Image 1 (tube, rainbow, N blue to C red):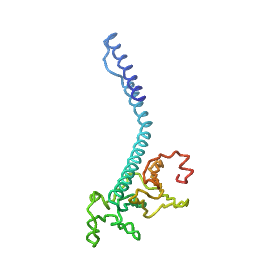
Image 2 (cartoon, rainbow, N blue to C red; image 1 turned 60 degrees about the vertical axis):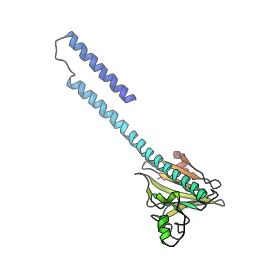
Image 3 (cartoon, helix red, strand yellow; image 1 turned 90 degrees about the horizontal axis):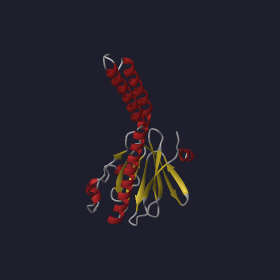
Image 4 (cartoon, one colour; image 1 turned 45 degrees about the vertical axis):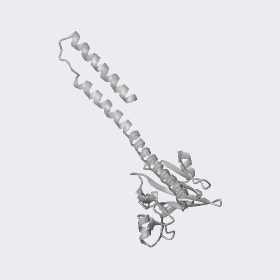
Length: 223
C-alpha cells in the first residue's frame, strides 16, 4: 500500500506541474524525459524492495497449504478408522516428500512403501476379503508436497522416549477408538520456515503450529 501511495503522489505532482505549464505558457505539454526517468527509477527501486517479500509470502503460503492438506488427510484417516472399525494410517515418504492413506488391509508393516498405489481393489485381488469403503477413491494414492516444501522429520513419543525419523518411510496410525501415537511432523520450505503438525495420542486429533526462529534452532532443525 505504501509504494502505491508514493507513486500516486509523485504522478499527481507531475500532472499538476504539467497543468500549470499548459495554463501559464504556450510551451509544448507532457512530461519531460527527466521526469519520466525519475518515475521509472522509483518504480524499479520499489519493485526490487517488494519482490523478496512477495517471494517469501508465496513460499510461506505453499508451506501452509501443504501442512493443512496433511492435517486434512490425518483427520480423514482418524474418522475412517472410527467409522470403518479398522486401523487407518497416513504413510510419509520422507525422501520423496509425499504421503498417502493406507489401512490395515493395504498396509504391510515390513514394507510400508508398498502401500503406495495399493487400493482396496488390489487387496481384494490378492485374496483379502474387505468391504467397499469411502476411502476407495483416495486409498494408496501418493500426494506430493507443494514446490519447495519438504518433510524435515517425524518425531514420535512413546513411554517418554522420542524417536526422530529423517529419512525413509514412516507413518501415523489411528485405531478404531481414535487413539494414535504422539507424533510431530515437521515441514520446511525453501526459506527454512517450519510448521509442526501435532498428533495427540489420546484423541488422534491434529493441529498446526508455525515455529518461531528460536524454536527451530532449539529443535536443531535450522540449516
